[in-house]
Image (cartoon, rainbow over all chains, first blue to last red):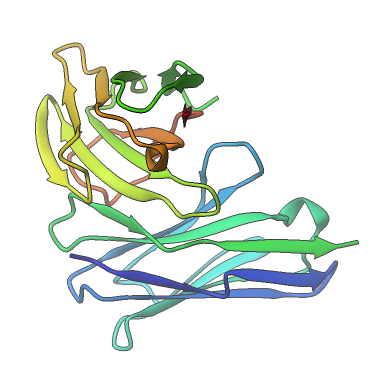
Length: 112
Length: 114
């Protein structure tokens, strides 16, 4: 089955700096890659996603890049703010499209 | 509020017992997914149902079972509980049959096995 690796597991940045989280996946047939944000004690929520026919997608301070050849994708957050502090999960859908596998998560801490 | 309802919010039980977790998907969603999140762990996929039929199974223990009923709500049954089953169990739903779309998560059921 699909295996998704995520790095780093924790990331601490100063407010205003950028943060980058990287993920790799194993199933070359995967074609959908979402990112979820989970604040402390809350449910995961989708923040951005990218499909395999696109190399990059941006939504205000958040961007995601995808390299299908290398089977890796990344989340970029610019001008970080304290409210960006949360656990971020990358995910990849299986080639059959019936299973969404999550990475291990990255705990992002933005220091004021 | 995601529109996905999970009950109960908290469940405390003893080893060897059996519990049932319930999930009502968003109105119109036909797919239901179950995930397990242990302390400081990621989201482990358990099982996916679409319109009453099992679509995919992840690393779900044989002691665990699930089903989706005609009204589309789903139940996750956990039996012969062990200490290691203590976790936050999330249910999520989506409209279609595939995972190539946004999942809406419920607020989870926190299970504590003592």
